[in-house]
Image 1: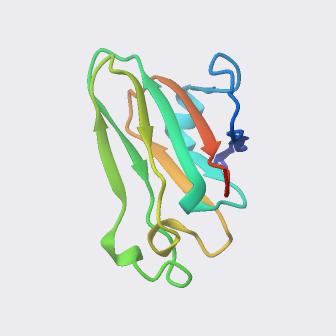
Image 2: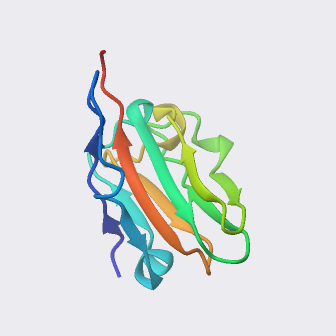
Image 3: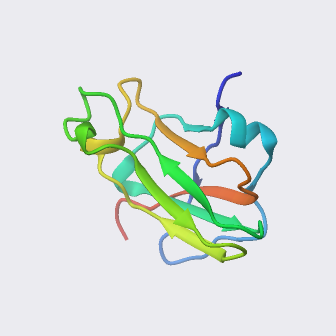
Length: 126
């Protein structure tokens, strides 16, 4: 099965963004297949996730392809998210480590992960 594409939600300079709308539920399909961010700009990417399961599980940002990701050899970023930890933020990221050769970023979840994920884009200028 293909990865689920999640589009950016753009943060707005000098304004606000509704946190109640937009996040995608991390269900069995997302845990099995993972997430893809198309047309990714890692330096302006922020991942917001909730984790509601009663046990800790990992969120994994996959290393990119070399080229363009010259630092891909540093490997994946694997972060354990504590049980019922509420909201966690990850990023921004380095293109040189996480950008795939097709311009995407890839995110995976450890089996049992439950909650939501939201992909936010930081504005280039404020």
